[in-house]
Amino acid sequence: MTTVTLPTVPPPPESRSGTGRLLPRPGRYTVAPGRSLAELTAWYGPLPTRRRRVPLSAASLTVSAEAEHPEFRFEFDGTHLTAALTSERIDRVRGRLQLTGDLDLNDVGFPVLLRLRVVERADDRLLVVGTARLPYRLLRRATGFRLPWHLPATRLRLLVAAEFA
Figure 1 (cartoon, rainbow, N blue to C red):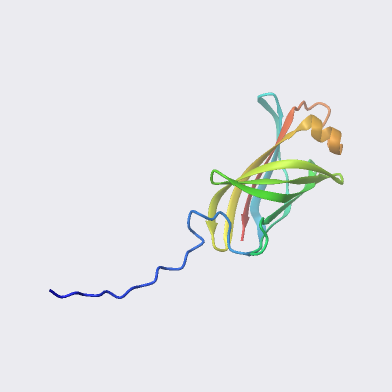
Figure 2: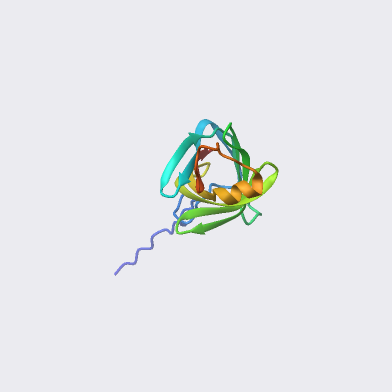
């Protein structure tokens, strides 16, 4: 009987495109013009009363090899909303990203929980869609943000879609 020894091939290096990682490799990523969408919806109970697009003037993602949490930053510049959302902590919950951060509106930081779904991810690209619910009364008291008087609202929903590359 003859024994044949097959050459051993080392396993391929672990790719970041696997299901274990939700973020691209370390670096700074921005959103190209026209590759993002932001929308602000006012809700009164179960009914949406107004829906408007808000220009997303800038968005960036910084993934650092040393830092524990990457940093997301969204800047909104429109007639309905002029603010910046900066993440402080990012958690993974059931395949999604939960950003805990501050919405800087009228020089006041309002705490926000933005839930992002990773639609597509590669080593150098990330496409996300997420929403944040904001209680309108608390937001108005804390920051002075007001909707027109004829527009009733109990909460606001901020929808963000961006492709970081």
